[in-house]
Length: 445
Image (cartoon, rainbow, N blue to C red; front, side, top):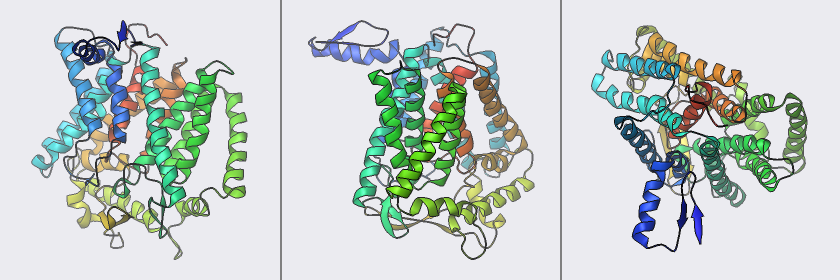
């Protein structure tokens, strides 16, 4: 029996085990995108009920991403061309310089150093490594396929949690789907499922009409709607709706209209007719804009108060910000009095815990208060370059790169980096950079 690895000879499973092991170890050397795909899949490995807000929180996915960076750094030392274009180098360098300036001028440089390292990992090193690892259509499909598989794993666990009432607490019932991440990383599953939904849809649209692969991918897209709904994550719902719309418009405007009608009809039948998610979905949507009148959702009002806190911190440190990891130190001295001390988290494993609010839950406000105007210009330049590049270029990878990037940019309005799945943001930025800021060499897509 033989297994053919991408861009390599057939790997015979009946070969002596030392030779087989050597072939498996050298596979990422021939196709580094295997490590990018492994990074995506390893987010599904349970890490226990650890404190995901800790200053240093290293996961198996982080280790895989760092292995990818190390592999491509080795290629660079060997004098190999990594395929990073000049625009890509400029926008990544801008982020490094902004983070370095904020760290040097920080209110607590030693505490900001770990934040600097994390920022460079998430927004520079891993995206650049993913960009360099993607060389052709096979590489892209490996990474997107990993997103789909991870979403199906987490979505399956999340659906089972909702149906058997073994998830995290929501309105007093253990029905909130959280996958393998637990109640302390409440947003993680919805992000993984959203990425897989978008990847499955984008891949499905590129497959031959009527093929088995197309049917399976579109069926996976439909299935993933359910665990996304019962995650009760408003930010993920909004980001996914925007991203799917943009993805379909990029692929085919007429197709987008047809899918919009079908999606609306399916939502009405699922939520209204079949009662999928019960009244929780409707109540969760209604709560988005309700911040006054005595019926406000405290998680929404707290988020707005955190944004106001970040603006106040920035007003005191306008140019280079207060420094990475400084928000928790300055929060109490700038926050409105009504801000809650933390958010509630509960499931069958951890019981009930009160999680402190240690970030503004908005990436743009986080950059503004911790890295100032210099930082927001640098990150804005990165995001704008990726967005315009994905919009401008046409081709098979366009809808996938643009859809995933739009999800991240919209979600950053309601969330920031942190938690087990943060490294997936890096992979998405790398995919978007590969498509939006191509090197001089021709891409096979």
